[in-house]
Every structure is written in C-alpha cells, then in structure tokens.
Length: 500
Image 1: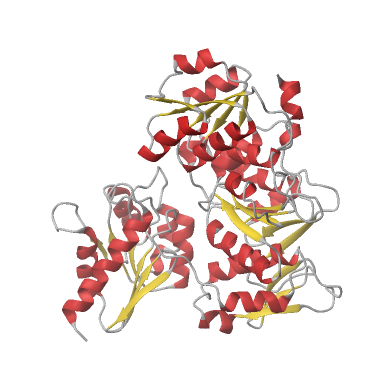
Image 2: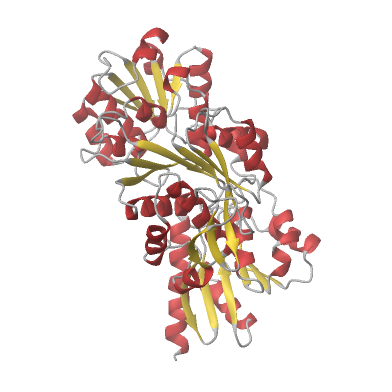
C-alpha cells in the first residue's frame, strides 16, 4: 500500500477504494471526511462525540460514523483495516489510537498533509496551485496570519488565511474561486503530524516563520524538546524565505538546522536596527533591508510606530507580528506603500490586547487570548504598572519565571481560577512586593464582577487593569472568548453603576 500512497499527490490521482479512518469529528475531521468521500475513498469516522449537524451529515456525504469511547482501539477500526489514518490535531502522540496506528505500520496523516496532496484541485491562471505560507509560534500566530493575508491582498494577490485560525486548509484548497496564496496557521499539534509524513507528501512552502518559542502544550507533546522539534518542522523544504525572530535564539537555530530548498534565505526581524537581511526599526520607522536592491546601504520605509499607535497596533509584540508579516509579504514582492495602506485599516481580533473601556481614569484591557506565560509577558511589557488579572488552568506550566521577570512590574495582581495556589506561591517567592488579591470561586459571586470590584478599589487616580491570565480558561469559562466577554460585561456594568 505504501507504493500506492506515494502516487496520491494530486486531486486527480486515483483515490478510489482507499480505506481511510478519520479520528475526531470537529470542523477539521469533517473537512477531511468530506474531502475523502468526494475523492472516492472509503471513510470511517471515529469520534467520542459529535454535534447533531456533523452526525447527520457524515452518512449524507457517504462516510460511516462510529461514536463512542476511544480509550482503546475499537473493534470497528481493526475490522476496517485502514490504509491511512487521518487524525484531528487533538489526538496526542500518546493516544492509544495513535500508538496503535504507528505500531501497526499504517500511514498517519493530519489534515494538512492531505490538503497538500490535493492542493491542485483549483489552480491559478498559470496552471499551478496556490503557494503556501506557513506560520507558527507559541504566540501571535493568528494575528500574524491575518496580517499576512491582509498585506498580500493589498498587494493584489488572492490570499486566504486558513488552518488553525479556524478555516480548515482543506476547505481553502477546495474553494472554487481559487487563491494565489494560502496563509496557513499551524499549531504544534498540526506540525507534529506533518513531521510524520512520508517523502511524497511533504510540504514545500514558499515562505515560513516561527514567531517565538516558549514552553507550552508540554502534556500533549510529552516534553519541551518534543514541542520544539514539532515547531521546527515549519521551516522544512521552504523555497524562498525562512523568517525568524532575532530576539528568540531558538527560532534562529531552527532555521540553521532546517533542511530547506536550495536558495532559500534566512530573514530576521526584531525591534532593533536591522542588518542587510532583516526587518526592524530605525528611529521609530519600521524598515525593510532584506528585500531591497541596495540593502547593504539603505532601507525601505514600511510604516512608523506613530502611525501604528494611531490605529492601536503599537504594543511591542504586535509590532513584532507586523514585521514578521511584512517580511512574508515582501517575499512575494508586495510594495511598501501597500503594506502601509493595509496597516492603516487593520484591527486586532477581540480579546487580543483589546481596550474594552476607559472610564474615570481607568483603562480596561482584555488580553484573554494570553493563555500562556509567554503571551502574558508581552502584555505586561506593553502595560507596566497595570493591575494584572492572572490565573486559570495552568496546563502544568510553572508561572515562577513569568512572575519573577514580568510580573514584578505589575502594580498589583488579582488571582483568579481554580488552580490559584501555584500563582500565589510564585508571587510570594519571586515578587513579594506586589500586592496580591484572590478571587475565591463560590464565595464572591461572579468571578469578573469581583475582579472589577477589587481593581477599582486598588487603583487610585489613573491606571490600567490588564486581563492577561497566562492560563487556559476551561476551569471557569467555556473559552478564552467567554472569559474576555465576561470581563467586558463586568466592566460595562461597573461603568453604568458608577455614572459619568
């Protein structure tokens, strides 16, 4: 069967009769099942649960659905004897079904692998499929993906953000309108699956970037080294530009160690003065010295920090994202004036360092998307002296380093979440000078109402309250978005009660 799989590198290959087991029935799993049945494959979908809509649609598209516990290998999967298993990103390497697949010698793909193989369903005017740009990093992936697509679109290219951003890559590949470029956000989970690919199916991206690296998802990957290795796959076989963060040595080492296509260039970015193959900042001006004929002697102006401040894009970590996105766009030849124009109309998604209100001298900032220490540190650097709302599901991550380095700059801390003790201990050990307040579930009513009550009692005169939890939200909220919305609702209720 491996010989046949090596031939399945096109939408127009013969996929008929191929037996594929799809693990998981979220948006990713359904897109894989839908694609495969359209191609003529035999598809078995296995999932512990499913929405009513997907459960109804699976048999409609011609696939078979088995619902139930997946703590062991179901007999239905053994009897099906798949040629390929396609797993949704939520299945870690340690999962019994993934272990069984690998031990059985069955090909293991993710949805991104499948999408790359069938990327020629819709082609450009020149007969070639869309180029791919790959974006990963511990933080900033979604913002940079949106930025890159926006800059490419302003430059006249048909570009689509997809992948971990919410639109499955397979949906973008099958869009009948077609694209010039797919800007693909990849989680470390998706990258791990790419790393399992056989040679015939490996991606060859046009450009790629790892924005930064900090410990995250360690339970899923099993170790920090495994997490780093997964992230490094983003650069493999890149054709034109390997963009990396000069301020994060781990990303530079990834590029140095990567097996790239001959001729690919390493392009650095940071907030400092750029070298001849970098993007950076000179006297408050964002400049490009990488994609410029006279790059050894001069630089091209992209925009200014002042202009970014006027549209709320001047936080240091957002500026880094802009420089990374600009590097990716410039690798396609997008002109500086187009980048400048696009940035003037760009806005961040909700819950990403979003100012939700300013009232009576207090600025309320929702960065609920800061679900790990690295992201929270960036927020704290943007708002030194803020009252820091921190805590939640820590996912096994120690906040000691964050508190010792960035947390000590906070004016005060309000600790939320069920798992508060490690946070309180971190402040006691590393930043005992910071006043710490605790919101105890069940004793004080709504969590965010109590946060607002505490914060307004702490701030005298002017100040900032920063929701940057450095933790997941599922201990007390349905999502990071729910957490941010509840924060904003509590702020609005306080404004109504306090009057003008």
